[in-house]
Length: 403
Ligand SMILES: [Mg+2]
Image (cartoon, rainbow, N blue to C red):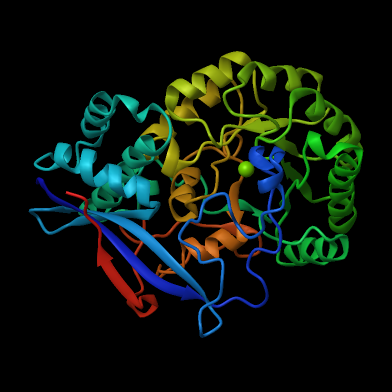
């Protein structure tokens, strides 16, 4: 069997949503500049989501998928990906993989890594990741098995999901009602996003602590609470926050500082009474090695669609297991993450992140949406990854190519 074509398919649809889609956002490193501080909506990356409603009152959504096709008729699908990643796949990845045996995934990964030398971090690695994921989907379809079986699972049938509340209002009454809602839906853990950084001074610091207090009070003693600072603090501020929030027993504080500052992570972790998480913006086995050697984190959080794909994430999980650091995959592709998580022990992989709003967006075009039931989530049992497209959600489609 040979790869004959790599297609990039952009689907357009719309998301019905009661109320404002992005009620609030997380603090960002760039917020230190006044012209960015008060930006609303979701200015981090468009992710194919319109900020304004269309004439029908819905939010326009565009989603890009990559499809790897073969001379045997079987194909593999991965997505959603962003436009820059699609560009790299079309211009750099596709020419290198046409004619390859799609089942020889390790060979293809290694060839791509050697050829795309800038692919160590960022969008070129997103491109390798997406291609790798599509090849696993293809292999599962070819062998008529779900991917978690090919990876050695199931270690367990379902995995606890944590409700990640990006985009929800941080107004205390609404936090309380939303936090209670997710507990009512069966979640045993929920993550909330800090809105303030060091330059917001003591009022901002108090608001951050107040958010931790509000969530803990809303969910009671038995639900895990995670807090995310999205790279936007510094070490001293993070240590101060950790001490002030410790009485609310966060399960972790996430990405307190920028991902390149591994020594700062280690410093924060050694001084913090609260566990420290990070790695959402780190890549590959080599990034994992650096975090683990430095003792930087209590929980490592690479993203399957960014950090190297399924092949690489399995290697990263092995490295984490050696250091006894749990790996909780960042949630940009839940349907893929549940396959890997179902193939790893619960001690190594205790949770799957479920970003509620992003999953509404990213899974819009999927026929079988992978969603938690009573706080737990299961991988698709269909051959491959189970990412079939629901044609009824497509208002328009186009093929992307820059060649
Ligand atoms: Mg995060």
